[in-house]
Image (cartoon, rainbow, N blue to C red; front, side, top):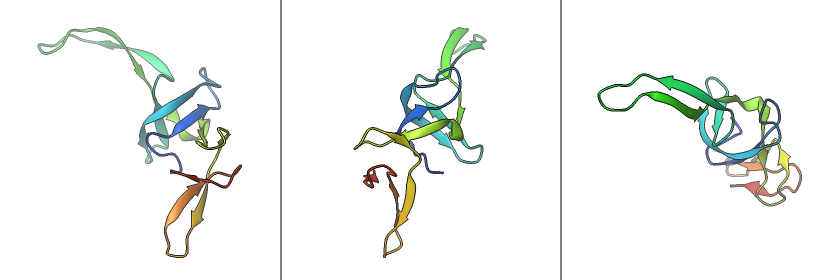
Length: 102
């Protein structure tokens, strides 16, 4: 998966289209990402002995194809390409400015 935790991403589709946020978690097996403050849902929680019940707001996962990584150098959204160095290490590179994404 090209998207990593703590990347800044731009939402391309859905109710939050056009918003930017930081990736909170990544699930490669389901091809999903959770972005802070994006795709908020209301979850009804039953009370238990440890915590109070009620309606809480939390982020729901987005499909990874609906977000694009924002380059920290040129601030443009794109899908990074993978560059393989001579020693075999892989790095993500911006398609617009050819700078490595760290």
